[in-house]
Length: 253
Image (tube, rainbow, N blue to C red; front, side, top):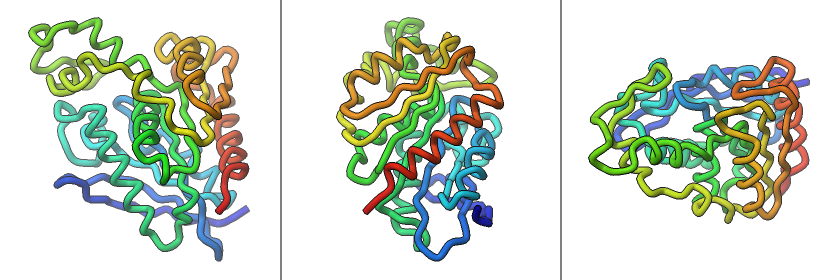
């Protein structure tokens, strides 16, 4: 087991600042890194346990707040300014930052995303596939664009703001995904992918994850019995263990 330190790291991106926490193991060699992306209205704290678990085993973790991604976000932007694509920009900025960081092994950077953060991580991996060694998705919300396009099928149906799950979204969020087919924008990422989903998840359903898994060339789909959209403590612990094993197995020059 390794001792590790926690440090707030702020990253500037396109005139806005991203707040996150780096969990860095104390080791002589450079550390592989897992970048954690939270779900809708979540925060970096959602992956504290996972980050601590990895850091104690020699793997660095960075968990951050998406700009405008939560009412509790410590990063910039209003929630009404956030879109899937501003979140993708944020994640790309995080990758760029850690590619140049001294104690991080830039050849072994992994993405881990939950729910909306899972969708954003999947889209980002497509664009940055040369830079990302592996992709882990926890109940990824591949359904987001379809769900909102069903609710607001035409431009004139889109409100200026819309409150959902305790957070107010702006018109731009819905406009940027009009007619967007998620499944046509994933699947070219050709390194290892691990998907975790519960068989009781009514949002990021097991069926949607199975559909996505057929698009990837190298993928493992783990369906957890009795878990919904948000895992139990035992389920989260198993995810942390499997994440460590995934990174260990896929790390290399």
